[in-house]
Image 1 (cartoon, helix red, strand yellow):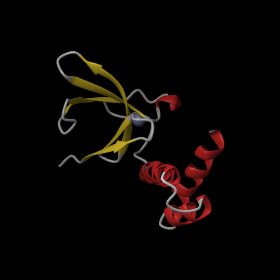
Image 2 (tube, helix red, strand yellow):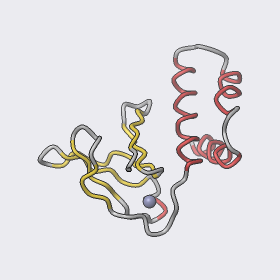
Image 3 (tube, helix red, strand yellow):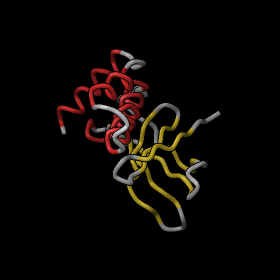
Length: 120
Ligand SMILES: [Zn+2]
């Protein structure tokens, strides 16, 4: 059974997690379909999937050839988005938000998260 999860990013973009692989919205296709590309495109992954407009049905799936799914990457992305949301809404001090959001992360996710922050 395929599982698909939709993640709204803080800039109004969309990501989806499909069978533990993460994708970013690439473009709307004609006939109400949406093309999503693998977040590891920079690392030469050519995988992409096509869904219908509801995003619930995957119509076409091009496999990833050079990497496994990264649950840590999904965790890191979600934690980062939660932090941004909370920071924007002033729920708490940044350091406390960081501590709460990262408390359940795996070491691998933590490394990715720190990487991602340093890139920005
Ligand atoms: Zn990929």
